[in-house]
Length: 131
Image 1: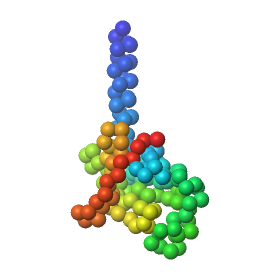
Image 2 (image 1 turned 180 degrees about the vertical axis):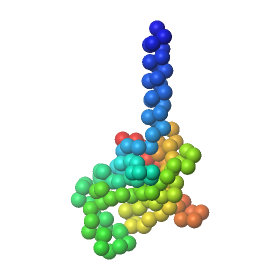
Image 3 (image 1 turned 90 degrees about the vertical axis):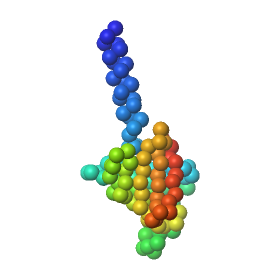
Image 4 (image 1 turned 120 degrees about the horizontal axis):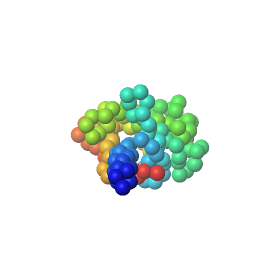
């Protein structure tokens, strides 16, 4: 009986640890892209792994004219985030809808991921869902 109880406690602890993990695939708030978030060295990055418009979608709004013909699939839209307490901060987010880069922070809110892009004191926060 003690072994069963101990096993159940370990499973609950493991499930709770997984729920607190930002790594994996997330559906953006608009539902038009999935982003895989992963660790590379001591920083966290995220790249586009699915697009509602299809894998041939181009980065047409990029501020750099040379990049407007590249495919968005695989583009790193989150980069350089480091953990500080309960948030990952100090990174950048690329918005393919307007072709601009912003400072970024992300954090878990229950089973959702909050993604905030900002310039100075102006910001926008989105809620991404785990996929």
